[in-house]
Amino acid sequence: MIEIAAPEASARPTFAPFSRRITDFGLQVCCYTLTLQDIPADFFADPDGAWTFESLAEAAGFEVSEGVAIGALKTPFNGHPDGAAVVTLDSESRPYIAIIECPIAFECVEACERVEVSAA
Image 1 (cartoon, rainbow, N blue to C red):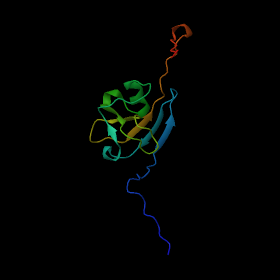
Image 2: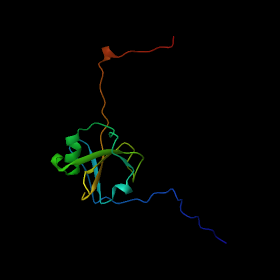
Image 3: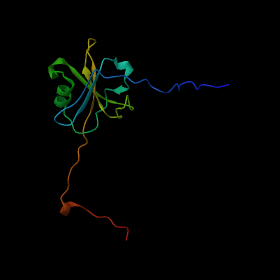
């Protein structure tokens, strides 16, 4: 007798975005026609990486004057890492939700400003 394992209850379904692109500034944007209940978003958290409110609103395809809401993923979702930006309109009639992965900001330090630590 062959037994077939049931799918894990904790496995989340994957959702196909209706739009996927990378902006000139390196923001990876995926747009979904999902409800906020479908996405593990925290609208009291700031997204990871280098971004401005205006750049995230523009990347999502919204005007700042439309009442944009920006949060961050609490946990990984659909291949996006936790901390990715969640951008949508702050209204009941939101057309879609954009998940935006922002590039990490690095700051270069001049060699003379570096401090070396030694255990010796």
